[in-house]
Image (cartoon, rainbow, N blue to C red):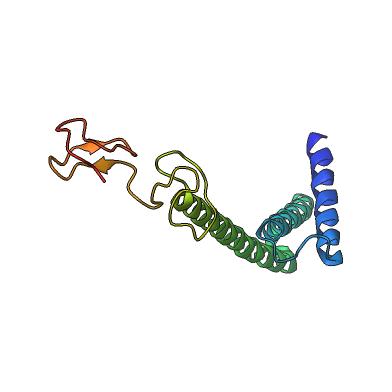
Length: 164
């Protein structure tokens, strides 16, 4: 019963998202919409596979074997092939989405000040909050003794040498 409720909800959401994408309210090329659509297609194909297996199973139970139903066996092969293709598509879309998110996070890290943590706009070389060079190492190395010091340190905590 719970599966029917959520299955119906998933189908309703799929129809809603598909309708919104076709109407232009949700961009069809949006990766999240593409992923949702591919997942819905995968779920639909898996449902068709289950329905066909149930049909074949009923016929086999009523007769002496599946060999008597080659047409259903061919349909099942085709559906399983489509499922494998859809699973590959969903996996590729997920990987693409994860890669895009990782690139976005990398770009944000490059714009985040290592000294004060301020997120600066693109194209800025120095932090707009504290003036620290962006993209600089998080730790300051002492030119005299080579000891790592916290970011923004002006004098080495080990030897007292000037860091800048």
